[in-house]
Image (cartoon, rainbow, N blue to C red; front, side, top):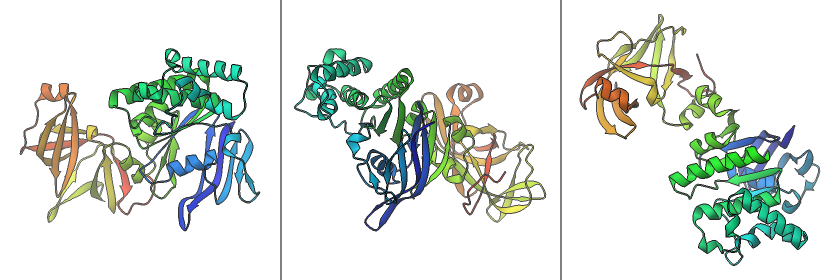
Length: 366
């Protein structure tokens, strides 16, 4: 059963259409992360779900109740949708104590003071802030304020919480800590979570499934983090997730050729069966390249332009034909086998590459 169903919804601001006939479900009890670049419509999608803006067409249902439908003239008020919301800027009232901030949604619903206090205290305990109830937000760190916002969302709804880039403003260590806390809390309570972010790493940490959204407001792929990472449906998804490399190649007579100046150099790939065509891109991650001897029959050659030590790994810029690619190597392996020097010619071997059409049509070619 789905907690949220969005069917062919569209959102426009004046003449600008932000979302066009988008459909997606959020399953009961799951954590779904919607990931995409800035200005792709992620926040507009959240605001439409919560009722802060109206959709121009389509239908939104929450817990099997239609809450938005222009065709049926349905538009349920935000407070009646009972959705907990956590914003990027926390949005805590500076003049209210932590406990008063958390109880505020219950006060608006005219919940009895005793019950509101009990529910607020329980939510505080869930986010490990029980001893901070009498403090003002100004007396809290950024991470603590975010916990307050999360607790307030929990008293608004223990069924559905939506989070809009809630940990972006925190430092890297605190971001990681909060991501795991949100994930653990979601598992503990069984609450359904819709998480909006551009941070791919956080999305992978928090989500059961990820939805990749492009800058035209369309969803390109939905799946588990592992599936989206290892089996991207098209070039856009491959390029959006992490660092990627693309080289234009041609296949002739079972051989893969890379344009190199006025001629070609062969790229040897084991067990690759591709029909003859001259419009492909070979796609691969920096960690999916291995250094070999320049005269090796397994791969192609490139010149190392830059070597950067990053602690746990070495990062290389390598010139291949008229393009530069990124190569990353585990520091232990690099030090064991020798770090390639800048200016040296190296053999390069690809591991599990993917092929896409050079013209950008959707879908993996082979």
